[in-house]
Image (cartoon, rainbow, N blue to C red):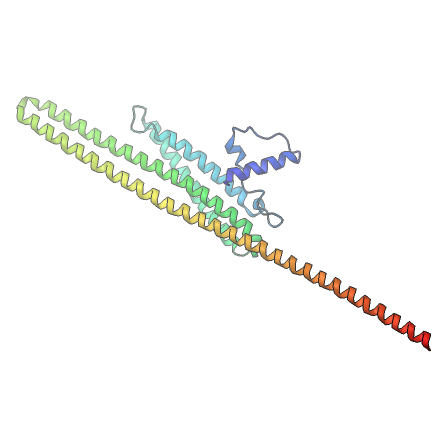
Length: 276
């Protein structure tokens, strides 16, 4: 369940309570804007603790990364202009600010969780892990966009250099066939350089993906541990309830036995009185 799923749960709850019609089902961002508000059970609510604000920041972060991804598709194409470059730079700065704010808020909430009793902290920590995972996934998408733009720009620079070399050699074509051989050699060198640079970028992308996969597995392990803690907590509570029921049954049996003894004692006393 992601921050969007929790947001939808809250929206449905609000509709049942009479708070008005639900937002359009197609507006996933709006549905996710109040992600962790319903978390916390009977204890501290996720909205009161600060997770609703964190969820809104992650939704905004996701939206801005989506806009940046659309801009990135035009880089290195005929649609690439100075205006696009400026917009891309400004959008990147906004995303970096949001990322820093989300990271700081996650750290602050983690510190606050450590001060809570275990019964209150466990459900909130589950929400914390889920939102941390969602943030990491969007952050990974942002990194992939940056790597893609880096690759596009690198290839664009190589192609520009290649065009400059071709222009230079075409202007010197009159010097003879020897120059043509030099052109072919230079073109081969350029192709090799482009291939080497592209391979390096692909290797960097693979390293980023492997690191993110490890982080996702780590986050899922934390979620599993939290659910184990919840299961143990429920088992311990059930064990306590069973013990209370056993004690009540024992007390009931003891009371019945005591009443029987009292009745026998009364009968014995009455028989003694009759004899006297």
